[in-house]
Length: 122
Image (cartoon, rainbow, N blue to C red; front, side, top):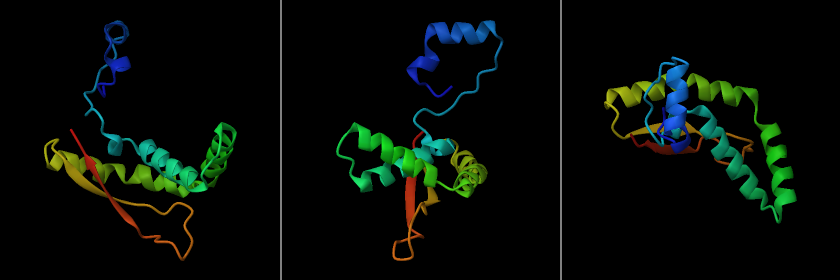
């Protein structure tokens, strides 16, 4: 469990116990162990660049930018999970820096090999 309040409520824990589900402890606020969080960040940046003027534009731009994300980007994020997890294990759950390559919809003039360092806080 990632310590999100809706996941740790008494009713949720009781339901999970009744269903006899095994609960895995999960570091709270650790988006780098969840590949979709990287996509959300990339989507947010791509939409922000387009500067939507209202909710309608925001929604349209979000749909457009989401459709531009190549399947290979998702595969890359998923395949990088093992190295991310290994880094967290190596430092026994302490903070670590993971190098993530951003390359979503960039042209040759852009910094397609831009590197972002993300801190995982456990």
